[in-house]
Image (cartoon, rainbow, N blue to C red; front, side, top):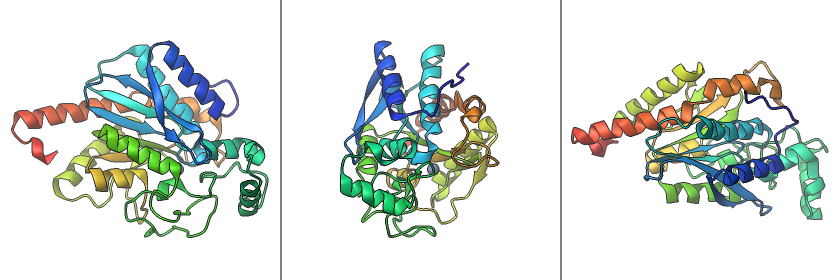
Length: 302
Ligand SMILES: [Zn+2]
């Protein structure tokens, strides 16, 4: 049903999709701007009652298939209009500069110095395996959660693993944090490629740990993906959500590990089927749980 007939899902494809949502009267907007001042759009589906979730994709450039996935997760809800107890902000492409670099090479970059720096860093005109933003910062290690303490962290610009000069040094991670703080979501989902795995922990303790493991098990049962421990990875968006906001937050690595990067789009339908109603089910469950706890006079532990 959601078979993608075209080539790679691009930033301009995303802007067209966002316009289409807009035409159907669906709320869309801007999370913020990238380093190269490209808009980072969102699509909102559901009820505006303050009980919301954020679903984001393509924070890593070469994982642009997850942008197509996040757009289609929003479309699924618009098309079938199932019962929603809250609302979902879909942010399909947190790293538009990186995705363009990945798909187009440096041709679209106007600044000559930046262009030659990127070519020097990448040592090739082929950027199809690039993960970082257009500044060589890996956005998913740039958040303020045990920043720079990770096993694989790097301290120089690169196609991956560079933590940046300081936490939130990158425009994209800053924009996502400000957006998240403004919305105060109950939960966040981050889509990555690849491995069919779910990351859920970041030093939670006690009841929060128990709660988050329970939701992680639910995600695992729905998708068929395995739960894994974070094992020394830090500075991610999910890590920051867990540590700073105290909410459940999950990184879902879609896509079978047997396929190499750049990840083949023929796997899209399989991935979509594994995830299509996951955001809504998770948000509804969390809202129901909170209501039950509130009824029992236990709201403060959630
Ligand atoms: Zn990733």
